[in-house]
Amino acid sequence: MTGLSETINNEEIRRIYGENTRTYEMILRIYKILGVRLSKWRAQAFEHLPVLSNPRILDVACGTGANFDYLTEKYPDFQEIVGIDYTPQMLARAKKRINENDWDGINLKLIDAKKMTSVLKGKFDLVVSTYSLSIIPNSPVVLKEINKILRDKGFVMLLDCQKFEGFLRIFNPIAIFLSKKLGGNEETYSVPVREIASEIFNPIHGRLLYSGLFYECVFRKRSSRK
Ligand SMILES: C[S@@+](CC[C@H](N)C(=O)[O-])C[C@H]1O[C@@H](n2cnc3c(N)ncnc32)[C@H](O)[C@@H]1O
Image (cartoon, rainbow, N blue to C red):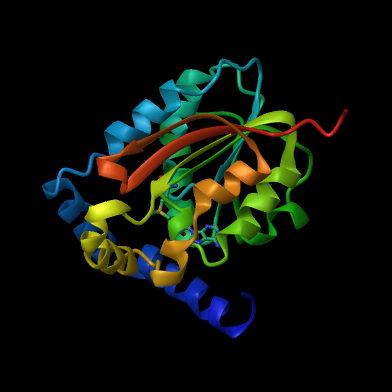
């Protein structure tokens, strides 16, 4: 999908995450009441990442930089961490976090994840994206961009939500309603991101959370050399 509808969605994203953060915070509170443990799953996802020496890391749709604590702890010798996001206010909060922690080598860029390879230079050893692809229109384009920007055999970690399967499907209207408040919609939410990612990359770890409404997975780029 390109053109007007995507532009409108991008503007909606900026409104939700930039101007109207109260809705975002309210949804996070509802999730918490429902037993959705976003922070706990984030911490666990980083535990499942491989040991890497001096990695260059990309955080796609980094938001306020909630992943930076985990990345700097797991990879204290990181070469560079680049955080990209489409909402200026989210990046401003990420910048504040960087300054408060005195982190050197974390750089931020205001760009649409679907166009990142036209702006970012060089390859990355690890790309992470948390709680974001389910609200980005045409997320398979982002997966292709990640594949382009990863070095051979580089790693990708995705943590996000998806539709329920099986008998729990009856709860999907509620899940989609909440997703809409976060900038997603029926279409973005229905993209089988894990399956598409498994076609592009080699899956090396994966698990479902909250009876399958959330997932965490790690992939590895296929080597281009035979
Ligand atoms: C739910 S927040 C998650 C932020 C962060 N990854 C985290 O785990 O806390 C979703 C983020 O995706 C960003 N976003 C949405 N569409 C985007 C796009 N096309 N390109 C880059 N960032 C985007 C929003 O600005 C927002 O910061």
